[in-house]
Each structure stands twice: as C-alpha cells, then as structure tokens.
Length: 114
Image 1: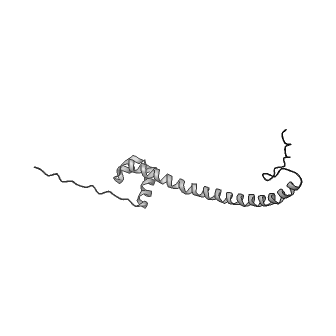
Image 2: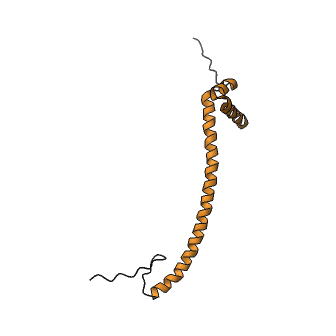
Image 3: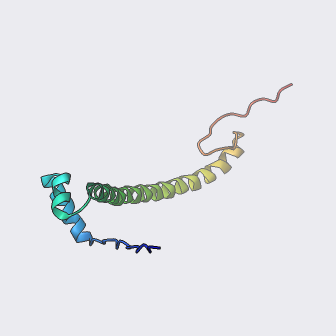
C-alpha cells in the first residue's frame, strides 16, 4: 500500500509596502502584466485594490462623520439654549391664557365641546 505525502502549501504574506507598490504597478502597466511579473494571481491584485479603496473611503467617511457629529453637538447646544428661553416664556404664556405646549406654540386653547 502506497502512502501519500501531503505537502502543505505555505501561505505567502506580503507587506503593506509591497502591496502598495504592486497596486501602483498594476495601475501603470495593467493588472495582468503586473501579476505575471510579480508572480501573483490577478485576483489577488484585484482583492488588494478593493480593500485599499474601502480603507480610503473609511477614513474619508470618518472625517465626514466627525464633522457631522461636531455640527450636531453645536445644534444640540443651540436648541438647549433655545429651550431654556422657551421654558421661561412658557410660564408667561400660561398666565396669558395661551396653550402651554411645545416651544413656540402660540395656539389658542380650543373651546370645550358641548
């Protein structure tokens, strides 16, 4: 009986610098040529390119989210200040016989139904 020898393939790991250079070359010469010259599969370069685009978008999205977050914090502070003023005005409105409700609500009370 023959015994089979199993050869385990070692996975090649590439540094981030190598990946960037390979992607630059693929952009210049084309993916097929760059992959053949570098001894890689085309699909590997396509995968690296997709991942690099996602990482780039992520940092851009983070900057957008941070600016939106800062704007929202300013807006909350403005509305809290506005609400504080409205609370003071609300006390005056109730003494004037107006409906006490949301800030800025100047509606008159509806007469009771008969």
